[in-house]
Image 1 (tube, helix red, strand yellow):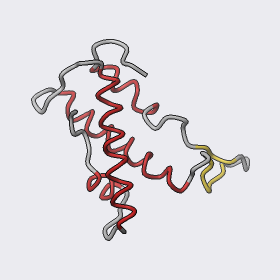
Image 2 (cartoon, rainbow, N blue to C red):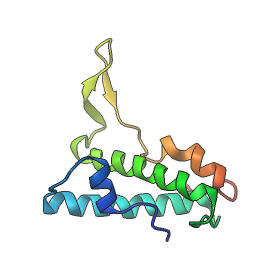
Image 3 (cartoon, rainbow, N blue to C red):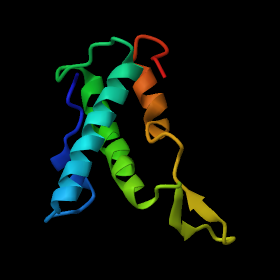
Image 4 (cartoon, rainbow, N blue to C red):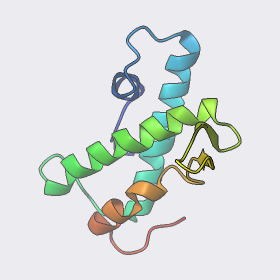
Length: 113
């Protein structure tokens, strides 16, 4: 499995400088999930540090990791925010959806899941 992101990188991305043990454990779990999800969607494509896609996928992993981390405070998908008309804002059903097109650009065709 490629390490697209880490728990420490997710915490830094979220601006958490003194994480609790729970936050550290949650960020680590999110990193494992995001890394596995991206690898699965790449469908066997090899994107390493020399590939132009590596930087894009690393940045995408940060975004997905940040969203995954935020889900602990939105367990049923509703954030504490509303749009301009007052409708509650929901998080995506799959935190990899927003980066799906970017991952697909570097994959070996449709990934699993």
